[in-house]
Image (tube, helix red, strand yellow):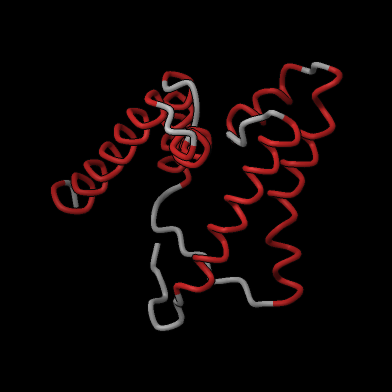
Length: 143
């Protein structure tokens, strides 16, 4: 993946972070729910009746957001420098990590840290450290 540093501005990142923070706060305050994507999607697979509406709306918003953005701005180019097999393997590893860690980066890193959850602090430190080590190993030792 390549970041276009010549067109990057911190304002779009700040605005995106603020939108994510506001959305997670609204979900927590109004519905009493944590905006952890793995838990939201996992709840869709359990087929419990009273829970489906907000979960479908949340996931639909995630899927539709780039299409809506594209109506007003150009999407950044996407460049993936690996095989589909490597992507599938990475997805499986991340999926296992979210199960063993009882949550994902959005649940622990955004919602858990903002609530000062000790479990989320540890989980976030573990997945950030693991991610940094993985990048180092793949980029500097294996390639």
